Length: 374
Ligand SMILES: Cc1cc2nc3c(=O)[nH]c(=O)nc-3n(C[C@H](O)[C@H](O)[C@H](O)COP(=O)(O)OP(=O)(O)OC[C@H]3O[C@@H](n4cnc5c(N)ncnc54)[C@H](O)[C@@H]3O)c2cc1C
Image 1 (cartoon, rainbow, N blue to C red):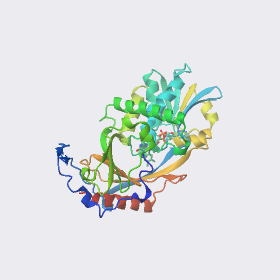
Image 2 (cartoon, helix red, strand yellow):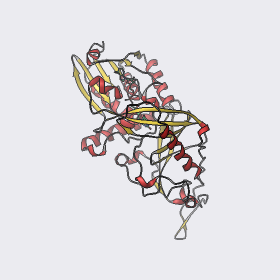
Image 3 (cartoon, rainbow, N blue to C red):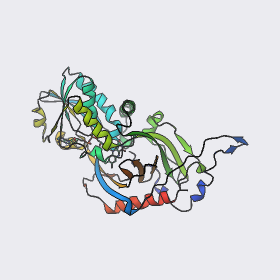
Image 4 (cartoon, rainbow, N blue to C red):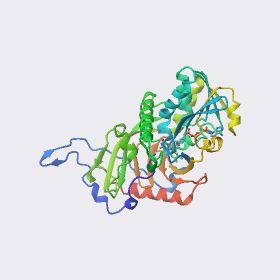
């Protein structure tokens, strides 16, 4: 999911820009006298934002590393540990891709019995990929769905906010592209409805010209229907708008389907916290895939890992809303378990407490946005 979207001054104003959308209903426009579009007008259901429609507010900690996620082999005593963690704000998105890379490494050992540490999106994808190769898998995890950080994720497919732009290298770019492409394909191989996956239009909005996001530029072809929109081509109170289409992967549905599949394929799931490398060494399986997310900081001493606190408020579901919106400091995803309103990105904050000021800001910002639609 995307951390920084548009220039600072670009907060949406609910007033003053309404006129920009006038004429949206026109189903055809003329340029130099010729008819250029015959698309029927697209209808946008308005999101109803009010305090009395709130059903919950949740907080999660993104497992962020400035230099990017880790896929790496380490020997711990007589065990081979394949690390697969540190996906920041894109762990649902990248889960199948980095897991494919990690499983390739694990398979090279020649062993066929594996421990997977962690039962979030990354651990579950690693477990399924190992099982698909015929391996015997045991998951060890302190928390299972619905208690993981992966359950808090919004679920937009977007390999963004996964590392610090200033730490990019040719290698990290290549790794990100590879993981993103593998993952994008894997999500499409799943039965979409059963796994809570849908393709939805995204509208990125601003009153300032929109920046390009470097992560998106790396894999632009994975964002179909990308287009900069003119003011008459969308109903939102914003001067600039960009549209593209992505998958929305709804974590509550997706993670429980994944866990069910792990179990159906004979996987064992052990609820257990591992406190040290020594305890990892004592596991019966010879190869360990470490998908402990932020937990890897303490368990394997990765000082670079830091939390990025995120907070989401959910409103009553509105099944008629079929688009996502992203603007500075705000985003809306229409999930079956509620209209999700985000969000916050607080580096280095470990608290899981709801920030009431942030909640009010997020709700008020979305209210202004959707009340300003025409
Ligand atoms: C508000 C918010 C919005 C987000 N939106 C998106 C989004 O739209 N798209 C997207 O792709 N990503 C999003 N993310 C990021 C995403 O949630 C994470 O990148 C992802 O969940 C990381 O998955 P994971 O499996 O590595 O970690 P987790 O889901 O945290 O799973 C870690 C597992 O390891 C276990 N574990 C940890 N330590 C130990 C230990 N010592 N012993 C045993 N078990 C241990 C845990 O119990 C858990 O089972 C969002 C995150 C937040 C907070």
